[in-house]
Structures are given as structure tokens and as C-alpha cells.
Amino acid sequence: MLKCTKIMTLMVVATLFSISFVSCSKIGTQSDSKNSFTLFTPISTDYPSVDNPNLAWTYHWPEDYDSVLEASTAPATDLDGNCYFIGHNSYLYALSPSGEVRWNKKDYYRPLSVDKLTITEEGILAESGSLQLISFDGEIIWEIDSMLRDYYLAPNGTLFCFTLDKKVLGIDAKGKTMWSTKDIPQKMSLEGAFFDSNSNGYFVMYCPETDTQKSHYCIVSISPTGDIRWNKRLPHNRGDFINEFLPNNTIQDTFLLAYTTDSGPESENEEYDYYTMERKEEKILEAYNLDFEKVWEVKVPRMGIYEDRYAVSKENNFTIVFNEVDMNTHNSPLINSYLTCFSKEGTKMWERAFDYSIATCPTFDAHQNMYLWFYSTDYNLCSMNPDGSFRWTYYLEHSNGCKFPVTLSPVGSIFTTSRYQSLMFCVK
Image (spheres, helix red, strand yellow):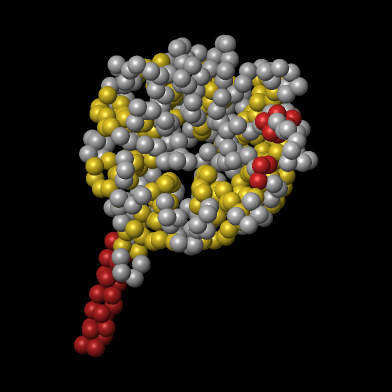
């Protein structure tokens, strides 16, 4: 009887220990044999819909400016609907949901290949000679003095940091280095990046070739634990790759790349207008799986070029903007603009044609409604249903176009900033 009692006691202790261990383990941590790390918490992108748009406020910065100072980053938002951005005057601004300046800080800069501030539940990531995590009250929580070129936040909260000496660091929410890789070829320069839903990063690199005096593009895929999954050279010629055409949000199991088919000059001495010819020639959309195996392609005979990113819906469909222009006429007038949706299998789900240029790729809310900007005389800001039909159109006065894709906030507001103006707009 005593022996059974001891056995039962040991089983209860072991069970309680197991429960305690499980309850102390939580999503948002990584650990190795010696350390435990706390990952960042990205801001949710399940934004509420904006159904009856009206201008809430306009902010003009700096108030005593002598020249035009556009925003150098797209507006970004926290959970409370505060707006953050960096101006070309190198100020980091924090605006309240009602448009009042909460604080600003001087000498801040955007990363080289990223045009948006990184906002997490822990704070704001920004660069001022060092990478800093700044509280929502404007106080520096920590900073890293390593000279960084770019940084990208993965969906799981791992911060990928590219240093000037060609290292890639994985940084956690406490500013600690979780891992480091030196396997990136030294001569590559970073051009852009995107992530899949498993937080694997896909980094587009420009690669000069010293021996041949030529160059090419490649994509290096790195796991959230710092392992290089693969390094693939892009097909076609270097000049054919359209490096603006990358996902604007997280991909699932497929991504698209776009190429022109211009063959270039026949001889080195031939005068050649690359700008005109790459827009005249046929374009190719190619879809790849996460191992960089091509799964389908579509040829696009229209004149023009893909000038912006594309958006990926929760249903894994791709929504693409294309402005068709007449390259055979002076000033290349618009023929039509197109918003096209492809499934991940390459089926054209729908396509809408418009008489006005489309300025930005769509931004999705939680219901997969789209928000984007047109250069129309009747409206500029608009929202569309998932099938491309209009939900509403709105004319935002005093805005000279739209510099970045529309930003949505968790409290149901829209932020947008214009070209050649120091203006930030909030629509609710």
C-alpha cells in the first residue's frame, strides 16, 4: 500500500511539473540551448472596414517650412490608431487619432529598401545612426549600434537585420541577437523582400559579376531561425526583371515575379531607349512555389509596365495593377488601367478596366474589401468589393495624388499622404 502511495505521489508531481512547464511556454518565444528570446508582436492586419468616408483631419508639416518636404515613409499605425511617419526633413512624427502632434524626434531615416515604418505592439522601430525601439510615448527603449542597411519584420515577430558587412541578424523584442548568418555573398546588394505565412523571408538581391562585367538578380530565402533555405538566380536577362513588382503583404504558398521581354540593343554602339522599348514589348508574369519552382506563366501584350507591388488576399488570390499606355504617341497617353485578379493556379478570376490611372496597389481590410487610389477627376480614394466592384468613391480635396499604398488602422481610419506636398490626410 505504501509503495502504491509513493508511486501515485510521483505521478502527481510529474503531472504538475508538466502542466507548469506547458503553461509557462507561450507563442512568441524562441530558445536555444542557452538562451530564451521574446519575439516582437506584429500589429494585426485584420482592419475594420471604412464604410462612409469623410475627411477627419489634415496635418501639414513642418508648420514653418520653406520648401516641399514629402513623407519619406508611408504612414503606419498602432493599435490605438495613432499615426507615425518620417518626413523628408528627417523628423519622426507621432500624430494622435484626432490629428494632433503627440511628439516628434529629429534625425531619423528610412531603411534603404523599405518605405514604411515598422510598428509592433512593443513599440516603433526606426533608425537614427542606430536601430532603435521607441515607445509610443517617444522614449528610446533600446538601440543597437551595429550599422544596419535594412530591416524587415517577419509575421512571427523575428526582425531580420541586414548589416553593412553583409551579415543577417535575427533580433528579438529585447534587442538581443538570436542568430547570425554570414553566408550571404559579399557583393550582393539588397533590393526588396517579402515573407510567407511561415515567416520564411525572400530577399531580392542584385549581384554584379566582376569577371564578366555583367550582373544578375537572385532571391535568397532565409528561415526565421537564420538558415539559408535556397539561393536562386532569376531567369531571363538582368534588365528584364521588374523589381518594383513584389508582394505588398504576406504570401502563402505561391508568389509572382514579372519580366519584360525586350532583347536590348544588338550592338554596344547602338543608341537604345530602354525606357520606351521595355514598355512596348510583351511582359511575362511567372508564378513560383516556395521552392522556386515555376508553376505557371501569363503573357501580357499590353504596352506599359508594372510600376507597383501587388496584393495577396487571404484566399491566396493576386490583385494586380497595370496602366496601359500608348508608347507610339508623344507623352505616352493612358489607354486604360486594369485591376486584375488571378488565382494561385493562374486562372483570371476577374478584371476591371478604367479610364483613369491607378496610383497604388490595393490594401485589404478584414473582409477583403480593397482600398486604393485613382487619378480620376470625379474621385481619387475608393473602396472595392472582393470582386472588383465599387463599394464607394470619395474625392479627397487638396491632395496631389498618393505617394504610397493606402494605410488602414485598427480603429477604422484611413491614412494617406500626397506627392510634392507636406500633407497627411485621415479619412474615417
